[in-house]
Image (cartoon, rainbow over all chains, first blue to last red):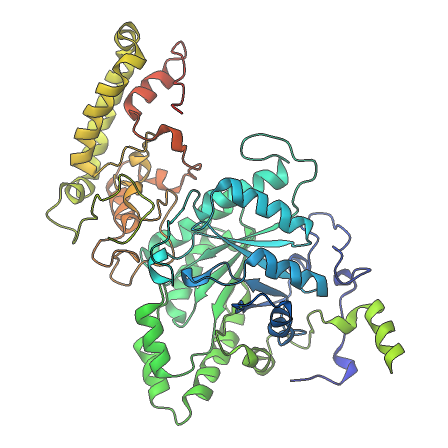
Length: 351
Length: 174
């Protein structure tokens, strides 16, 4: 999908730095110098998407996969061995993305490293221009391609948040040793409102906020009533005022895929009604997309929801269409390369 | 045997949620809470005795007693920094991811563990237990990362030391 109409292009001045790869000038009240935090703090409905990391050492594959999101999303999640499968590392993907000017969200899973490795990685990522991290527990090794691996789980997602917050705000490692420059990260947590114990889930989010979470991305939402139940409690406790909540969505390719995901992907809850709707459709893929678009539109109306996180695994090419057709951006265009004055100069030279 | 982060290795996860003392203890979390509330001050007040005997000298026998009692009641894994009072009397070290702050996102719809499909999620049980306790709201406390040097130590003696400022703090074993 392309947008040739230049009238669409209205970049917010705060989101444009001198150079695409350089951190933005600091703003008061902001933890990071990245674009995602600015978009959220301005009260815009944010869109993030998940990049399927390549099994390759070729940076071009990362660039190609990120390019299809350009101008449609405010942040790109680089997964960290998702599903306990081995891929290019999240820190490397993020550093490649910052070279172009994208706004990556680095996922860190506690499964694969201990606190020494994680803190070192956070410093390195910050040095490479990464402004957002998502702190995860990580899937168990049994669901991946190396089930014989040693599961580490030295920290858990909550103590990981507290660790990075300590580094950022107190300018020290967990051990107390001083940092000369702290990593200015916008801290994210994950939550799954669709898995038991349902009543504990909002409390768990509150714990993560207490540990430092500033934004939260949830598991796939296919069950709006269950989300409403979660959000009701979240609003009652004022958690939506302390943390930006981005709800996970994604297109289901077919009823068969949906059933497979429900049975095999940890934490994914898909109600029977959704599967029945897919089964009854002439074109299941188109129906899956339609369900996703409708969900995004409904989520935009839920009070306390600050955005959506699109996980279109192996259907990444449809993300732009889904975001466009849902209309959630309301005419806003997230950052793209030609917003940069320096890039426009290059473009005009080549014409 | 699917690898898990917990130790000791080879201690199999329990199946179902009945027929094991651990689940009895969670169903009677309030009783366990009361028992511990009565027990803790005694251990703390016996500090002069522990000091006379020598904390270091009694560490191993005390840890053995604690492991036997808590092992039977809670399937305790002797992490040495017990937080059962904050986890509904469900030992978090039985979680194959060793999560001490809450469940992961992979809990199955039937409330069982992502890693061990036959084992009820430690945190689903923790939530149930915490609802029965007088001070169940402690489940909302943020727990710091575990200190792996304390593994195998007696949490009871550690409490006695911490509550008595004149006791020398335990030196972590290398």
